[in-house]
Image (cartoon, rainbow, N blue to C red; front, side):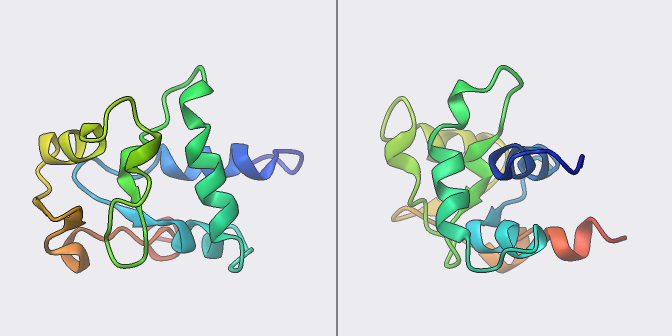
Length: 112
């Protein structure tokens, strides 16, 4: 990341690195970016990520419990769930099953 990148741009760079079939949380991204208390700002970045010219797979970012809290910001109420299921995730009651298994922690994964 370049030093002059905005926080939102840095968030988008991290989200683009999340592998298909994996998910992370707003807080994990904030922590990776050195701003652990900024998970809400990560959420705001996801809310407007559809305006980016380079695709941002925002459906792979969920809350710390694996819940699809950002689903209201997609074109339809079921789009986030459909995109995740297309990548192999199992969802029940707006929550990812086996969240611990699918969780991608950028602090660990990007330091390897």
